[in-house]
Image (cartoon, rainbow, N blue to C red; front, side, top):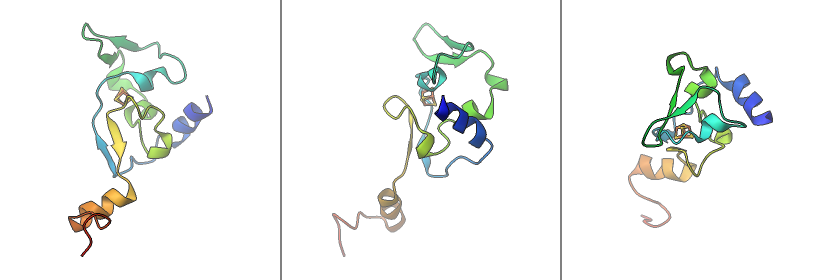
Length: 99
Ligand code: SF4
C-alpha cells in the first residue's frame, strides 16, 4: 500500500527517459496491491482497462521510474542501466571491448 501511495504522489512527475520496451498487457500492475475493479481480460488472457481513456496518471505512466517498478518479472518495460547508457553512447562495451 505504501508503494501505491508513493506512485500516486509521484505520478505527475515525468517518465524516466531511459525507460524502454512496451506494455505487454500482462495486467500485473493492475493488481497492485489488489486487483483493480476496472481490470478486464480478453479471450487470449490479455489485460485491458475498462476506463482506459480516463485512467489516472499512476496507471498511465507505470512504471514511471525503475524505483517504482514493482513487476520487473512480468512487465514489458525496463530501464537502461548506467553501463548500458555508456555502451550505447560510445558504440561499444568498454568492459569487454577496451580501446
Ligand atoms: S506490468 Fe507492465 S507490461 Fe504488465 S500491464 Fe503493467 S505496464 Fe503493462
